[in-house]
Length: 521
Image (cartoon, rainbow, N blue to C red):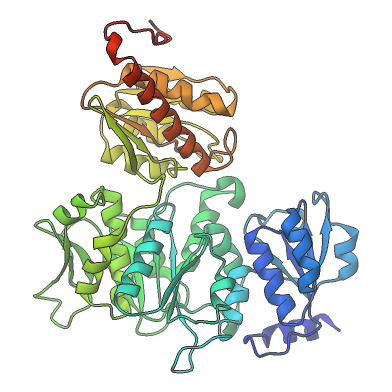
């Protein structure tokens, strides 16, 4: 088949019911996303080769069952097996950056490269709604707050009587949601910058056209993957391409507004702003402690609809400023689908934040211990520190190519102390020495994983006093010392509870302080 014929065939594959039989598909990567891709294209009748460096035993066992082949080995160069296979299309897992050797080879060879989001959009009509149409899509991205906003939006849609599925980068592959036999009215798709980069390679009629989209915020992150902040921003901006009803943006983050202004959207699509201030006629915001909608009502120039109050959110642990912003963004997306204000309020009555997201794990002797291990970049950590001013800050890990100096300059001087962990401590220590030299600084050496948090908690317990907060907000990835941000958070919580249990046992001997001294004592 000629290259023109191959691309012509690919351009026609815009339905589950198209003829996918015999299409040579190379699936790059075999995590949960990669397997969902392989399972989908195998079910469609394609000839499937999965190429990955390593494969879990469960996937090794399942691939032959679904009719796919597996190659494992070093991907520093393009394997001969892949060259010989001559794929019509490569569907890459989001962990593979644009400069990866296989991606570079494919693009130079003129081979189509898709991500899982594009494949899912093409086959989204496998299961349809009662009206015969496939589910609407809502896309959610941003440097921080994506998962919380995705869960909030899905909860609000469900409270409004719609069948909604949170999926995508949140952990449930979008292809699994598309193929779910029960079907949905709306898919709420969390998309990472990696997935959006692949989505940005689309052209023509196959472009994703979501009902509504939001970029919550923008700050430096994943620069090692994208190569530059400009490339990272360009990937994030893809979320607004071809939106039909509502482009939701953060009025407090000029970059998101600019993305909307520059976006190529469907005629009639509206720009809907949100922030913590008084809203304009096409915005959601706050008036006298009340969260209100001035966008989705007829008389929006003189009226507003009440959604909930700050006091109600405080009672449910949802009043941190960045969480309130996420709630407003989610409400805007839900309102764009016709969900009533009362349903939004009902959804918030039972909503709970995920573990490791500003999670209070203990309050003892006047000290509050907070796990925000999910703050894996400076922007997220800044929000946490704003919610807990004067905290004893546990910071550090893999910085992912991001300069932490601005965060330390902005938030560091207000902290009571900093406890630095991880392999890239030198950059953090240097930032404190330059921008917050008066703040006490303690380093935890790169010790065994099981010992890191025990040392952190011992140090923090000596520094923190009545009324203080100890805040784990690392501003960095976890993979230098931990399996994941969740593992990091679990170990921090376990160390806190172990420390508190030991302290309780020693209460009978009050006055005998045998805790190890601080390094400067």
